[in-house]
Length: 423
Ligand code: UD1
View 1 (cartoon, rainbow, N blue to C red):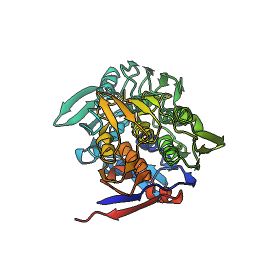
View 2 (view 1 turned 90 degrees about the horizontal axis):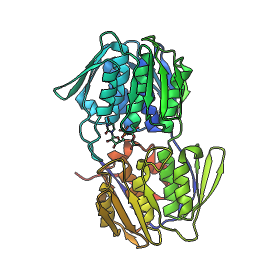
View 3 (view 1 turned 60 degrees about the vertical axis):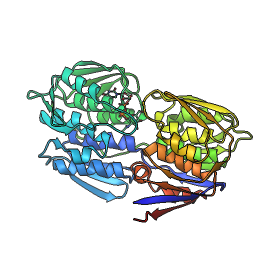
């Protein structure tokens, strides 16, 4: 196991190139189960979650080849198993994304239930009830979702009670091979969902309403798709994290290969805190603030403020002059970074899903523990402005979603090193 050692209180400067979006790449890898050809996927982030899903597809019988660190070729023509087993699914909840494609293509599958997860209960009831509406019979047996639909899925009207990102993606992929038309109401419209729909549309699936909360998917009745090669969109959460690194150290840094249109809520919030921006083509430069003002944040679905940026903004509000409030509306247990930030001298009060952050106090370095992917990046941000040397343990959480993390931070002047834990 490794940890990160960070010496704080350094100004940052320079450029960071943003990688492909993990949360876009995962459904796109699952989507290759709908293809009749081998598919080339470019701008894939070199992170642990991608390798986990690649391994799952290999276990099903797919040929998965890493052409280089960021390019994959996947051939699912020889898939012979429809069983996604617990050993892999427990590592990553997003493995549930194979459920829709496997069921649509083979008429049956057995996918381990993802179970609990550090940031909350995160059920998959909405995925399952939507597939039942499309004609599937679903049973839970020995911790597995056992789904069958011998005559194939049929189009249906799906009204999601809550907006679910992977739920929408699963049903869009299932609907792509279904018989007839599926009407999805209250669909997620995150950029990652939009890219999935656009690639399916480019592969011959007629989809109306892309980018809106009502999708109409005209299924191909089990005709597999011819999918062209494509490039994954930039990771808006990685981009937002590096913008926060610029903000918390009040430094000018530029992120390259980013899409400002996907980051509007984040940029708007940073502007309200006093930071300036220069935006051109795919570059976003954050400019220092004269005075860092507190913020009020409510997490919500896209295009609102993303829950995946909540922890980073909590770290940032520690350097603001005044009290910030952060209201986490999507996940019930997404404040695990709070107790670690308190160890660094933060003044944060929690009341249910609302955190009040009394900013402006000098942070001190400490040994802290990463608890989930985004919470861990908040600890890095706090360590960048703490007095002394912090050590962040259990960084395998970070490796799930941030490519070349310490190299990218070093390139903008952070004093950060990855070291092996002593046994
Ligand atoms: C995705 C993202 C994750 C992000 C989250 C919210 C991926 C791989 N992960 O997760 O990074 O934090 O969106 O933007 O893209 N819910 C139910 N029943 C369901 C499904 C969801 O009650 O069947 C609830 C969840 O508990 C949560 C809310 O709906 O409260 C939204 O969850 P959802 O959008 O499904 O999150 P994920 O797709 O798992």
